[in-house]
Amino acid sequence: MTTGEVDVAEEAKKPLLIKRYASRRLYNTETSDYVTLEDIASFIRDGREVQIIDLKSGDDLTRQYLLQIVAEHESRGESVLPVDVLTDLVRSYTTQAQSVVPQFLAMSFEMLRESQSKMMENLSNFPSPMATMPGFDALTRQQQAFLKTMMGGWSGGTSGPEPETDAPTRTGEKEELAQIKKQLADLQSKLSKL
Image 1: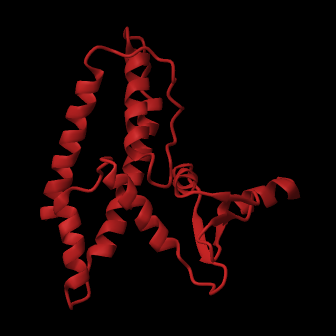
Image 2: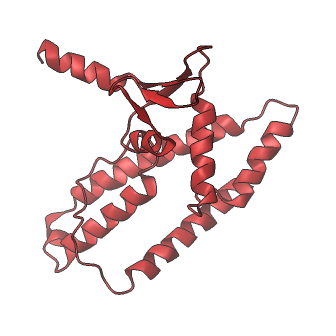
């Protein structure tokens, strides 16, 4: 690796620094322009770590803005967190004892990222007899697109190939996706009750 390549790799590992001005505008220090919450959400979906600092006080506001992004997505009907999970989160703030919820959530998301990575790897390494079946390529692209959509919001991204954006849609695909989302919500609900 050359020195330039090492610098680029190290730069990608550092969090993207966003400064909040007194006017509450958010300033991207890498590109020297103002950004919105949706821009920040996009950076995070692309796998970047983000740090938001108040310019005047130096306070780290990252947690506050990440919660705001989640709240905006939830309020637009892009529900990821079941009501049971949200209720348990509120309860964890009100209990006097040290809550295990933050550690549990962190471990759960880490396990989910690892599982996603393994599933994507397995999809791309299917045995050749399966790959010769008619329609196998379309099925693989559909599974990868689904996993990328469901997991795209969590850092770590996907390790598999990008799905084709102009792939033909199948009849009933939306219904299948809705059914899978419902099953995932049911699974999350069961996990939250444990």
